[in-house]
Each structure stands twice: as structure tokens, then as C-alpha cells.
Image (cartoon, rainbow, N blue to C red; front, side, top):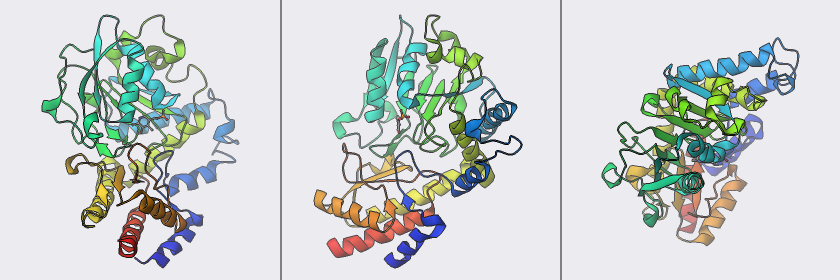
Amino acid sequence: MTLTQDVTIKTQENQRVFNFSSGPAVLPLEVLEQVKEDLISYPGAGMSVMEMSHRSAAFENIIRTTETDLRKLLNIPANYKVLFLQGGASLQFAMVPMNLLPATGDADYILTGSWSQKALAEAIKFGKVRVAGSTESENFARIPTQSELTLNPDAAYVHFTSNNTIYGTEWHNEPEVGDVPLICDTSSDILSRPLEVSKYGLIYGGAQKNAGIAGATIAIIREDLLERSPKNLATMLDYHLQAKNESLYNTPPTFSIYLSGLVVKWLLSIGGLTEIQQRNQQKANQLYAAIDASQGYYKGHAHADSRSLMNVTYRLPSEELEKKFVKEATAIGLDGLGGHRSVGGIRASLYNAFPYAGVEALVAFMQDFQAKNG
Ligand SMILES: *Cc1c(COP(=O)(O)O)cnc(C)c1O
């Protein structure tokens, strides 16, 4: 693909660029089209989803259908509750220890990047925690192996981050934790691949990367863990109460839940999580292959066995070239490629809705850029 063709792509589909943003991030075009169709008057309701009561039959139907479809997509067992919360994954960093870390217990945290560090920093405010593994000394370039973990068999829970959005690493198998409840921040790879929910005590993630827009935070929690919530907890921060009220204790982020519902429907319509995993694998493979074929011009941050399918991070020979790369890429419609300051370089986020054509366009640009600046 030549660069002029890329520019042509930029002007297609209503002038949409290829959006490599790490979050909020690209949505499926079909979902946006549906939003447009429903925006002024949601079918049967005579008003927008933004205007309807969260107690109305129409919204009741939206939230329950979203839950039912999500249960189908992720194959969520009956003994798990699905919650739609607010405050992002960042509030979950606090809600997890507030609800699930008893005064007499301690919790294990595995550190694989900035987000797991933030989760740990928050948990320290509420109880006793241990670091059960960390790759910080290697600038989080890989996921620790099972044998490197020092897990406490009596821990209240083990917390880990399945995909490290900033560093571009991802767990390809869950850590083995025996009977200790496993808790996972899945903010940046939720719904990107099949997941065995029964291995987890709690899965949570903000919707804005792979499952919708900012506003809703999805939490999937095993019912027995709801019994741990202390009685004196603030109502809004109490999993048990949120579950009892079916996420409708107060006004939930209605439009954001509706959006997640559309994203889940889209995933079901294309063949579910096995199909999206294949697509994600194909996109990531293509980009990693281009990095590996560049003879060291592009250097991946993540070790090969820890590479993320969602966020591909890499460096160029100098910061000056990296700036030039981002600037020129942006000019032809390859948007949002600047890396996070803690890794530097380039970060290409290839979430579910990111199209394969965008990866092809990026690879063509990378080859052209290297030829001109190598
Ligand atoms: C983006 C992100 C967060 C922060 O999410 P908020 O919804 O902004 O609080 C936490 N964890 C991971 C892995 C993320 O990618």
C-alpha cells in the first residue's frame, strides 16, 4: 500500500482517521451508526437514551439486555454478578481492598506496570498488602513467570493486571493461585479474547478502551465474595449493595451502559470472542512482524513472550526521529501513536474495533519512514 492510498483511506468513512489512541479509543463504525440512528428517538421510547429515566421500562430493558448479552459473550457462570459502576478502574483500585481485604488478612499484588502500581498504592491505604512478583527492575518489559511469584496461600486475594496498557505487555495465561480469589484489572483487554470467568473472584475494567465509552466500569464478581463487604462502607462503594440494587441504587451512567450494550451486540454478531481474538492476533502479528523485520530500526519494548495484542510499544533510533515519525504519521491520518512518557517512543493501540487496514497502513508508513530516515 502506498502513502497516497493511505491518504485516500483517511477521506473515506466520513473522514475518520485510523485511531491508535490508548483510551478512550476507537469504536466499531457499526456501533456509531446505530447510535446515530437512535440518537434523537430511541425505538419505541420517543426520546434519546440520554433523556430517559433510568427507572423507565426502556432503560430497564437496555441495562438488562446489556447484562444478558455480556453473560452470553463471556459465558459468565450463574454465581457471578455483573455490575455497572462509575469512577473508572481507578475507583476499583480502592473498592477492591475496601470490600475484600479484611482487617485481619493481607492481599498479594503482582506488579507488571503503572496501573498495578497504582492499584497497590491504593490498597496500602486500606490494609496489609504484599508484592508477590514484579518486573519493575526491567522497566516492566515482561510478565513474570509462575516460578518467580511468591504467593501467600492464605492471602485474601491476588491482584494482577491482565494487559499493561502503557508498557505493552499482556498475560497469556492467568497466574495460578490455587483457592485464593484472583482479581484482575482487565481495563485494556476486556472482551478481546475468551476468558474463563470461573477462574476469577472479580474482573473489572473501565469500558472506554474495548467495551464502550467512558462512564461505565464493568465488574464481574463471584457471589460469595459479596459477603465480605463491611457493614459500615459508604453505600456507593459497597459491592454487596450495588449487586443487591442491580446497579440501579442511584442513576447509573445510562448512555455509557447503552454503548457497552451495542459493543457487546457487535461482538456477538461477528462471532464472539474466539473470532475477535483471531482478528486481534492477526493485527498484532502483522505489526510485530514489521518491527522484527526492521533489523533493529524499530525496537519493541516487550519481550516476545509477553507481547500485548492490544498495545504495541516500540522505539526508534532517537527521540528526534520518534517525534518526526509521530508528526508525519498524524499528517496522513495515523492518529494517536505517541507513546506514554514512561516508555517513550511509539504506542499503537489495536483494540477490538481497530481495523486491519489501519495496521497495513501503519506498516507501509513504517517501511517508507525507515527507507527515508534509516
Ligand atoms: C486505562 C487504565 C486504567 C485507568 O482507568 P480509568 O477508567 O481511567 O480509571 C486502569 N488500568 C488499566 C490497565 C488501564 O488501561
